Amino acid sequence: MQEKNRDTEFHQVVVEKFQDIQSSICSALELADGSGQKFSKDEWQRPEGGGGLTRVFAEGDVIEKGGVNFSKVHGEVTPLMAEKLHMAEGNFLATGVSIVLMVHGLVHGNDATLVH
Image (cartoon, rainbow, N blue to C red; front, side):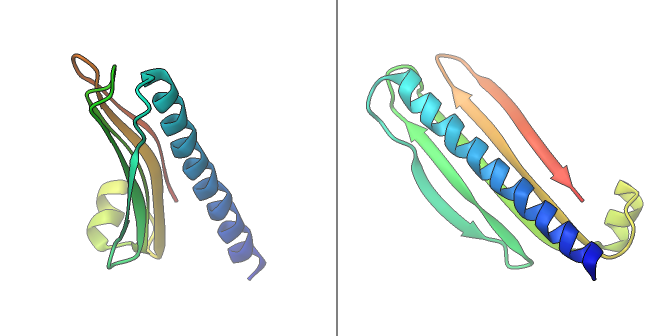
């Protein structure tokens, strides 16, 4: 039981860190763009477990369009997941932040992901 509590606490710390990363990136991009435009926010839920926050920026002075997305999904490890990802049966949590920016061209990057 104590191990499960430690895992839950660890997962919460990681999730909060990724949410902070998303917020920091959005704030820095808004400032760097200089247009006064702000990221819109769209919260979503995954029926099988989890959800996320999509943040979109459009029509800035420097950033034509961009997204900074956070997701946290969880559920049961399927047999296919276990085979392909070499995971044990049980539950999983996957979380991360991804960035897509169009700045007079295209910059695309995936920041970080945790699967546990």
